Image (cartoon, rainbow, N blue to C red; front, side):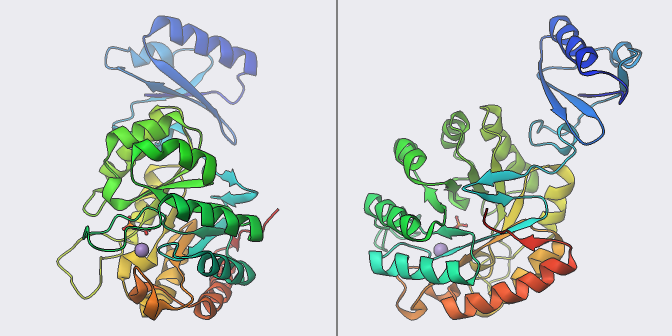
Length: 342
Ligand code: PEP
Ligand code: MN
């Protein structure tokens, strides 16, 4: 349930109202001051609350039942877009974040070299897998802790904040210390114990869509993180499983519009895992911007043919530079911009 206060109600009147409602009902109340109105979001069992009684209050504009199961992630609770500032870069609002880097960190030379070239082309964050969720236990599993150390060296040299995937709740402290954005991969989207632990942290989380997850299941995964008090969740559409086998997955561009309608949280797109094919990366980046995405996460490798993981979908630093230049033009059409570094 949400209560929208009258725009004439003063700060003091709204605070008093919150206190009165809290003592009258056994619910948590989240107060969001947006542009033009204040919204009080009720979290908890609201079934027995008499809406008309609240509606008749002089300080109240209107009361609405929120039928969706997600509350903190719900746009009704927070009508303005959430904008997060991470390492001096914004994600959300007018800014389009560009996260680029290899699927996996392979060596110091590789990650530093790629970081330097994607930064020169306009990337705003560096990605790199240290713990890899591979389908085969015999495939390269990532450099693990050493991979995180190499990412830190690349950050030190370039200033790019780093994004890396967590696989196990036991490594959470290390990720809090080492990375700027913790990625939850598609395969862990419904790892509820991991989501709960991430909810206790105050680190931004990049939440990839599960392989076969509905939009509601995905938003509920974000709600798990937010319920613990961590509000900084960024969705990432990375393609879903369909009957189609030409592409690795099917990029659901409509998910961007759905998330924008249902939630205030930013959403970015991963055209690399969504298609699995490097020639599709560029057009899908433009399509994502046209559909309203808040950023892209793109796999870039200095030598895709020799990549230890996901070479077929990785583009070269040169190709990446061209994609960024084109994205700048598409962003301008949408009255947006590739994030500038503060
Ligand atoms: C990745 O980003 O390297 C990755 C494994 O992605 P996903 O979880 O979307 O498959
Ligand atoms: Mn990959």
